[in-house]
Amino acid sequence: MPPKGTGSLAKALVLVLALVATAEARTVKLAPSKKPATVKTQAEIAEKRNWDGAQAYRKKAYPSSTQAFREAVARVPEARYFFNLCASLYQEGTFSEALTACGAVGRNNPTTALQKQADQLIVWINEDAKAEGRKLEITPAP
Image 1 (cartoon, rainbow, N blue to C red):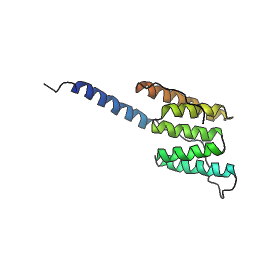
Image 2: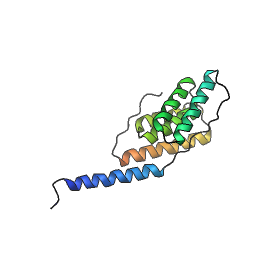
Image 3: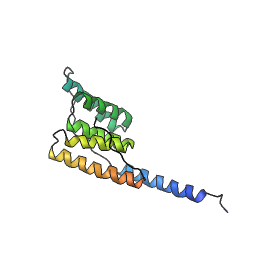
Image 4: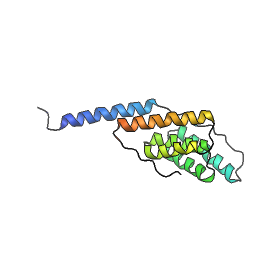
């Protein structure tokens, strides 16, 4: 007879493995970034931080990409920087903050295509949070 409580542990392990597989299957493509030649203005610094964040994201170094995207947003609050921040936070599993960043996309004049991507990412965030039994709270906009 198995030790008391191991059935629940096994079920929890299966759920965690299923969630990890689901998260790995969903890949979010970032908004465009371009590497600036020189860095002088706040806009150029923001573009450079967005570029750095995109490079870290591609290497799956999500905490580094999140930090870089936060710095880009702090300098120039563009929709694409908010989207990239949202994607990186989503990959980190920081769903409430990701929702806040995705919400900021719509308040910063996104292209139609970028808004559509943000809307899809919001759906994924909500689905994944529900699957994990997490209650999401929107934090104040960055």
